[in-house]
Structure formats: C-alpha cells, structure tokens
Amino acid sequence: MKASKSKEAASWSDVKARLTHFDHDGLVGLVHDLYTANKDNQVFLHARFGLDEDVLEPYKTTINRWLWPDMFRNQNASVAEAKKSIANFKKAIGQPAGLAELMVFYCERASGFSVEVGLQDEGYFSALVRMFEQALQTIARLPDAQRPLFMERLDAVCRISQNIGYGVGEAMSDLLTEYDNISRRR
Image (cartoon, rainbow, N blue to C red; front, side, top):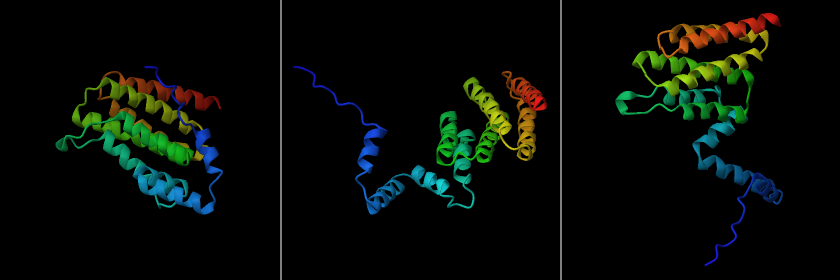
C-alpha cells in the first residue's frame, strides 16, 4: 500500500488569505469565538486593548503560580510556564517598562522561593540568572528616569540570591557590575 502524499501544514499565510473573505461582522465573530475559547486569549485581548486597570496583573499571577507553587497542594514549579507568560505579554503589547516589570518580578519570585524552600534545582537557577541578565538588558533600553527603581529591585534580588548557592549570587553580581560599567560609558 502506497503512503498518500501528505498535505503541507497550514500556515499564517493560509489563514491570512482566508481572512480577506471576511466582512466586518465575520471578523468580529471570529475574534469573539477566539475570546471565549481560551482564557489566554482573553488576557491577550485585554492587554492589547488596555481594558484592564492593571494589564500586568494576570501575567504576574501566572508567573507567581509557576515560580512560587503551593507545596502543600503538590503544585510544581515551571520555568517554561513562567517565561511563557512574559512572552505572551510581549506579543500582546510588548511595552518595554511592562516587560522590565515582569522580568524583575520573575527574578524576585524565583529567588524568594529558592531561598524560602531551600530549592536545589540547577536548571531553575540557570533560568533565573538568564532572566536576570535579560532584565538588565531590557532596563538598559528604558529612559534614564525609569531605570533606578528596577535596578534597586534587581540589587535586592542579587543580595537575596547570595544565599542560594550554585554560583547564582556571584553570577548576578558579575552581571550588575558589567551593566554598571556599560551604563557609565554612555
């Protein structure tokens, strides 16, 4: 028996071509269906259109859930899910100050949880240091007036992280020094 020729996977181009046939009501209906289909779609649309008073709140709630799980309820930590929340915000509106806030919040929650429960997870720590570096890079692109508060918070994360081990605190200290040297050259 011969294998049938498989059809190529649909792509954005295929979807876009189909959208040209929709009228206004059809597009509104499609967006409504997407809105009701998934909570993530609702969060995305609320952020994109600035419908919530605090557009960062649902993203922070997700980050908090995955980086500071309730151990008594047998919840697990998930770096991937926490990072996904930041990526979803970036797709929704990508506002630089909001992105910096979520990255710094990620670092605060991950380091706080690690110290509080005595976490021993090298992958979790590596992701924390990478996010710390990404936060520094994002903050560096902000206007000068917005940087100090974020930097104070990252400095606090660095101090807390000295108690984690695995070289986390040292890596953060090195990154802070590197960032400080770069910002002085500007």
